[in-house]
Length: 289
Image 1 (cartoon, rainbow, N blue to C red):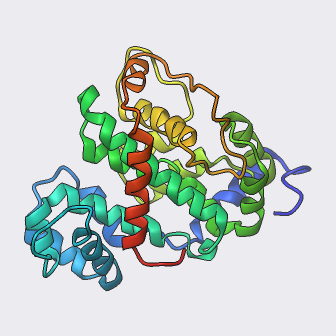
Image 2: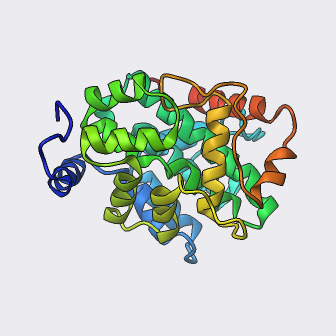
């Protein structure tokens, strides 16, 4: 899509962008199916069987389960054992983590995709940590944070060079970047992400997070979209930006209530803790990408 969408109608450019995203291989079928079934009364053996059916995915999940992140005394011998040790919800979050690491294979090895991966992972970890303070489910929060920018991953898979260059050379200001995405590629990553999650028939909560996480949250509502908005800004400030130009270290993020008090009360070492967990997760996943 060289030269952007100049001379085309916006709707035509958007339709072409959506069609291109559909041609990209979807996220892991196992990860999609498990997210569709989240909240159902699933049997441990049923979930283990689903994960084991994908050999590469199950190997990644086992590697994470047996890593130093969880401190298990005896390594899990298989997926069913892992589910029994860590619990169904935790293993399901690890499935999504491993699946996103393998998504958008055409862009693997690029600096832009690595930044997006680390940003998504940072948002997931931040959402997980903050969720309990506002009575939200930390596992859902983690998944919402991890998937909030799935549109960027998809766009890098389709337009690896074009979108990679845009992210490499852009400043971190969200609204300006959204506008540049629409101008250059015909679609913003928020719309692309919502479209992909809708296509995969994932829960509406996750779709809304992908669509609206850059919109300022309502001051009197604590939901997963507001949580992701807050986490996204924090991840940028902690140095996990998707763009080549980092956020100014002296820049103070504007966080509306009820999130402001939560952010102001974070411990001084919170950013360091998030960074350490990102590094640990990366070490225990397959290299490359």
